[in-house]
Image (cartoon, rainbow, N blue to C red):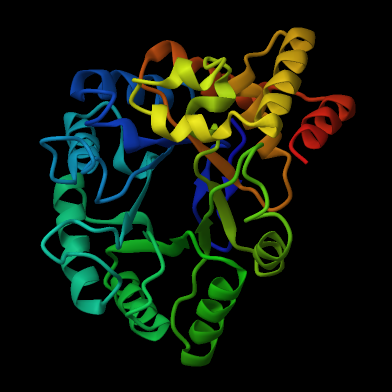
Length: 316
């Protein structure tokens, strides 16, 4: 399978990244192992997680996703160097443990490495902006982790154009490592925050882009026909907001393309993302093996100019 180089790094990833937020939430350990096995057996290699996944579940403390991935790696069946692990720091882990200070990053990375049962992280991301910590301090901490060999590449999630530009400026002026990866929210429904100046900045500076909420919390899979369908499900609260006029136009366009191509709406939505300027690969999750098939199929979906235009206009 053709792999894409992630920004200016030497890291090559397959065109879909598996979202590990489901591990310890909607997928237990056994199911998570089966999903990961199917994913890598199909030729994919990049897995996205975060220290905070899945702290939002009753009884969880955070770190559950990383722990499951670590157990899967330790079990064998895949060589560590054949897998790209992406994880994040900065979200609230409780008891004041959050943010992007040098002190917290130095502690949090050791905890992530222990849970992942590895001695290095391929891509380490600042999860959210931290207004209480300077870019200089955060980038300095990340630079030291790279120099120590604990991380291979660094980046950030949820930065807007001005924030990313400032972070790049600080790195240039201090001679420290710069952000080479961005993880923005981007999908057929949510487009305005990435398209335009932020996408231009990423292209101009050769920053790798891996998009999250690529399927809009499952909305773009077509399995929910109304907000009521999503009520009571694990992602119900996050899906309901998409059921406005624009959301319904997008679903109708996906259904039309699906009918004409025979491809699943989820695969089509991911394939559309792969055509977008600046995007390296979308992140997508699956809680069941049958859902995984759309992720695996997506890179093979060829969308015509007419289909791309239909999808594009539906979300405008």
